[in-house]
Image (cartoon, rainbow, N blue to C red; front, side, top):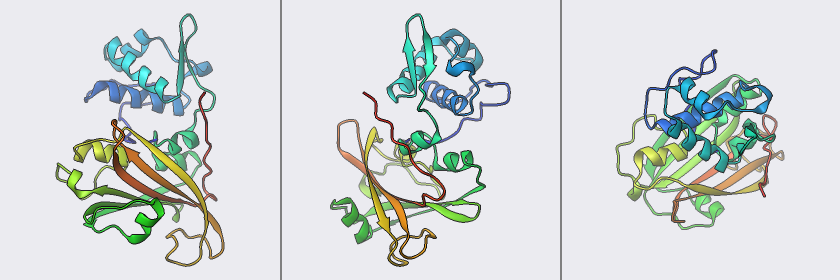
Length: 253
């Protein structure tokens, strides 16, 4: 959806100026938030020159940001037509791509959201390796994130990163997104991911931490995250109570 930090630059007046680097990435996030907040009329973006003035960055920076958004299927750019927002774009589709945070998705549905997050260096649980169908190293960083909607657990995320890929000290509260986590703390960042969507039924308390009742269904995502060269970088297991959200899948031609 895949890095999920929200720039401070979006305010009621459309944008305020960006101050931090990398500018192209922050410009992309600022434009994406404005799109999701429906701040552009007629599903059309301003020109590159206008966006550059709004964010106080160069036209080259804007062009790079727009190119990234186009690659993700969020916008379409055509000569003599301009830049338009694709009709499928919304938090539910982008959360599945991990382009926006799960907290954004829950808030967009009108829920009060709380996130509990922790991490530890440990051996990966056998159920994760079995579910993913991979052999994980003995020493991994496992982050656990619990997304509560109106005090009910709606999404339960476990991200697994091999310890030998870590190159920077991890703080008590690391980046919530596994994409951003690998950018900040690992030698190799995530470039893309593949996900299997698996419908499951809760058989007991060990099946999932979600609050669904025994015998009720929930959705689990098995994600493998890859580097630009196609090597596995991280893994995720995500349990979702679809009483709160339902993902939409959009396939580009």
